[in-house]
Length: 254
Ligand SMILES: [Zn+2]
Image 1 (cartoon, helix red, strand yellow):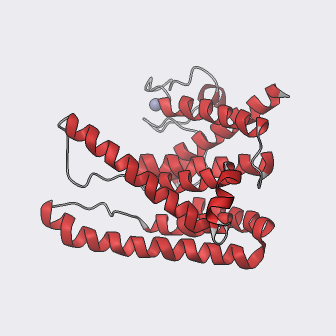
Image 2 (image 1 turned 60 degrees about the vertical axis):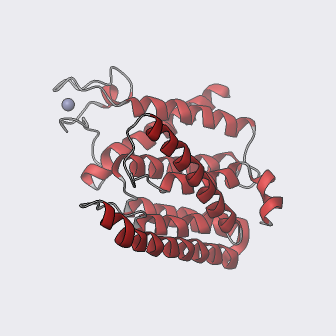
């Protein structure tokens, strides 16, 4: 049984890696290719060994290994202690979706529409099953609107403060993909748990930003308003509620 779980974890990681490699560059799911020279790769080389391009000798990124090790570990944890609300299989699907969002956001500062469409359907299916239609839609609406307010505040901040201090600053504090992600997480968590999820993500982003700021100041590499993608923090907040729900349900009245 444990070998099956490890295999499932590895397959989930391989799927996250494949979609994160292919989708941002080609906008659709094509045959695996080298991320450096973009020549097609054999499945054996791409998935297993040696994971090195025969044309340009480029190794597959370290990320592909890290993701696969992490998903195997998470799958083992989920199997040993399944999430109270989702159970093992749905947790695995949610983990794959979360992984794809986090990696594409970290590497490309982008939350892609095809991923968001899949997330919306997944969110609706899970939400309705967990909280019924009304609380699911209410959660989605609340998550979307809360992130929309933050999006406009971020845009105002960028216009009045960042532009004045640094010419050519083009990254928005929040992308519209984050607003859509807020809606999707709202569907999954439902009302009112989504507010707890967003609150957690803001706390987490604040804490990590402060640590990051201190480290860059100490390393004398400080630049004002460095872009930090916000999507991974939203995912972390939601994942905490979904996978460690029993601790939070009482705290946030969900
Ligand atoms: Zn290559």
